[in-house]
Each structure stands twice: as C-alpha cells, then as structure tokens.
Amino acid sequence: MADFRAEAIEVYETTRSSDTRGIIAALLHLAETIAPASSGTPKTDASPGWQNAALSYLQGKQYRAKTVDRMAGWLAEQGFDVDGEAVSRGMWELVESGHVKANTSDSQPRFSAVPDRR
Image 1 (cartoon, rainbow, N blue to C red):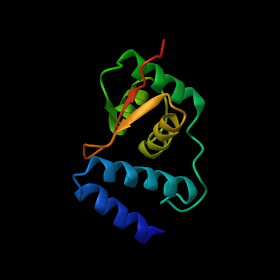
Image 2 (cartoon, one colour):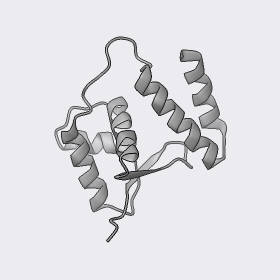
Image 3 (cartoon, rainbow, N blue to C red):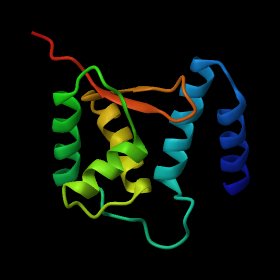
C-alpha cells in the first residue's frame, strides 16, 4: 500500500488536471481510511465536536475556501487538540456527508461550505 500511496501522491502533485487530482485525492482518502500511512492503531481524534466547529467556521465564511493546514491552525486557536492528518480525514468525511465541498485544483485541496438550499 505504501508504494501505491507514494505513486498517487507523486501523480497528484504533478498533474494539472483538476478531474485527475480529484480522483486521486478521493483514492488517497479511501486508502488512508482503509490502511493509514502511519503504522499502529488508527487515530480516533476525529471527533464530531471539532468537525462541528470546523463546519460552523466554514459556513460563516462561505466564499472562502480553507486548506487543511489553515483549518488545523484555526482549530488549535479554538482549543482543539487535533493534528493535520485527523483534520484531513475529518474534512473528507464532511465532503462525503455533503456539508462541505472540496476544490482540488490547487496543490492542496481547499474546503468550503456547501451553500444552504432554500
């Protein structure tokens, strides 16, 4: 799995096609969910508490997409002890649930709130 991950990351970083980048990002997320890159027990620090805070933050800034690093920094400022890997997994979970959308056209995915449908 490590060879697949390294190759996928290399392709992700070198491709310019947003469609290809989105597919690779989704595959990396699935691979990370099934077999995390770090050995040992899976981390369980992706709690609904910080995810709800992140979602509220994004909804308050609906037109400003945030990277995982920016979200992790903001969560740390809010007193949440969560690392970048957990934030990445949690943000992709919010994408899967339809609360957040991901833009994979940049070197790092950017997450933003899905507008309310009224």
